[in-house]
Image 1 (spheres, rainbow, N blue to C red):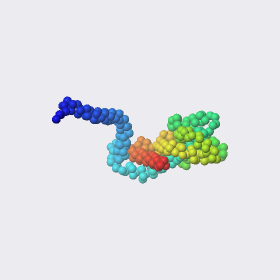
Image 2: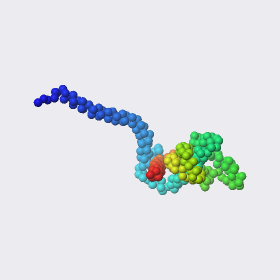
Image 3: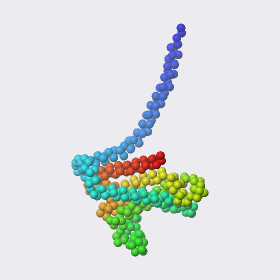
Image 4: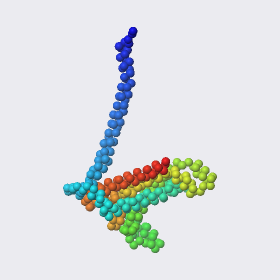
Length: 313
């Protein structure tokens, strides 16, 4: 009876173990590399996003004027948002601005984008640039310009005077018209963004679909409803998400045009965060407002995206 030589057996064991060892080494190297690549982004994200959010949540549980000693408030600052008419109205005004920042731009941008893509008129490149122009100008500059346009001796009031309906007070100084006037500026700014997003989608629709619809006797309205609209559904959801965020967190526009006035008729949550922290000396209330605003924006975005996924299904 013969037995395998010790040298041969040892070589077989080594050769059988090497692939497993190499595989473990490769996995370990991959894990170390992944952790090393994620380390810096995680540190930066934690330092500039996660920590400030946790800090704001902590501040929202205290009564503090920003200088003196803080006292425990619990959820009193959150209750104040519901109980204070001024703070409650700010959120209602923010919801109104969603109509001007999100709904109206989509209603205007859809037919406008369709015309700019499908029309064969000369000079379309110039008109596309003009439509998007408000997006590249600082909001502070736009606010100052529109403040002059809305003035009592501004161009809008002058034109209205030609028809005998001249305003006796500036639009931005009217309790009735101040909020719609601010909202219309948002419509003007957001329409360019929405139009460009929709144009990129409409441009991808094959011309053969429209030609087939023409042969079947479908009119322009039918082509828009059955071909163009389904093709831009994803871009509409993106537009709603972006413009809704802009509406709820707008600050510079309100600050530069009305500063929340007249009275509190144009206050919005983002402006109230500034007002409560730096003017009213209530950092806790301002922090609670910021937390509620963040949760509201997040909830609306989740609802929009869930609805969009359901529509796809």
